[in-house]
Length: 491
Image (tube, rainbow, N blue to C red):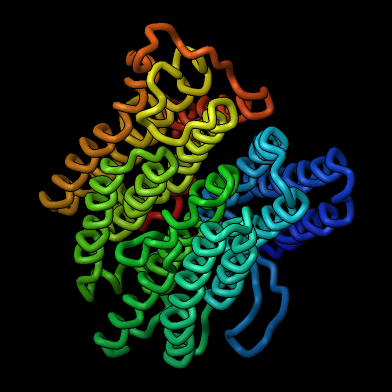
């Protein structure tokens, strides 16, 4: 692998930070403010996209910001794994800028300047995580995401918002400081470095490190990156649903939870490595551990009538597919898990965009109130149906590719239990998504045989959700773009 120094990594990381500054300066002029948001998002996406040809050519791009101690630096790296996250997050920020403008103005939300600035700062942290070259840099940007998204979760500044924000901040910062930080210090003591390995085979831990210590470090990292939504450290995520819908989309698709699973899988593969995990027997136990989250969160989702709450528990379940795939330690499963970072992002942001559009037009939050709405809002509920298919894992949408490769990986690992988990979770996914679509298109509102007299939301909302729905199909029909990145890192 050719390693090349490239300053575009720093420029890409700083683009959202500069955008946040411009948003605050232009806050009293809404059109100019949102123009700055769009310019920052477009600049970030253009910079990330410019890296794609070199990464596809097998290069690894690096940039050192500061060398603090030997083996301890703030440094950036673009490789195949980071591009899966960076490409999807940077593109979806562009789409979300348009959607947020329609949503926030449609509801005449307060503090829109703060909202847009914190949104940009969250992307600053997310892209920093994507491009981190070592565990120390990853930890710094992980904490930046936690701090910068607190004002978004507590945006409404009421009792419910502050309570959700408090739970969000306490869960995420406490787990990182109590588990990841001490693990990081001990890893540095054992190895003399926190730099990620160049491949997913060896990891960085010495072969003679005590097995019990390595296992404990591994457990600290799996649980410490609590943005990954693993039960029982998932409660912050449903609580954060008090935020405006664009924030929910940010949390679930663009940045926060993806930072959690990206950090978790990055450490699994590039700190511990496939060989170490296999030798210590950490793979299948991890897969079964997160399988509980996959099934339990799906069962809870079935009980939720509030649409955003159901989508939140769906996210808790779906995130663990990514970790399960990597934990199986088989090439097909690792590829399926990593590609699900992108597949889930496009589908889940579509679902939350749809939920927001429904609320703006009808002010309805509960699924039981949505009978017949599909006939009044066909574009919104059509997009919802396509994204639901992805969550279920049905062709031709992106989630089918994930499930296919996970099933192949489970067969390769010879694990009947994981196969049953995947089948059962697919049935549960269908059980909590299909009734929503059925109600919208085929059920009649109680006491009203005619379709409700509603219309679609503003085009600034409908166009973005239509684009992301189409892209959910595109990554299923043409999976090569993201799959090529994933397969290039396989052992």
